[in-house]
Image (cartoon, rainbow, N blue to C red):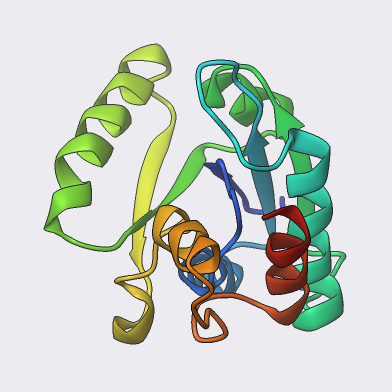
Length: 163
């Protein structure tokens, strides 16, 4: 039986930090479902369809990752429901700094209460990517800064076209 992990997030936009987590996850799991959140309570720069396209271009065109090992979807449900749908018992989450831990710890606990068969696995991105956040990347682009150390070429192109 294949080991599948669900990697949920907004990916608005995807960064090298997210990509680090995906690459490390691929060493552990046979398949990763990159689940792009489409809940209404967030103020996104890109809509769900745009974010899915940006993630696909970043992973498959820019980085040439294996399309057979990564599924990219949009979702508007509980992550635990996605786990059922994709027959996964693991939610993959990235940690950048101690400041992420409290929120992620609470989220993992809530998911565990919703379904006690699901584990949350935390992966750290490499040191050079731990400071990257989608929020900062968007701010830097708005101020005409250079973001090539933070995300892929196609993502940069999408950001510049949007902003």
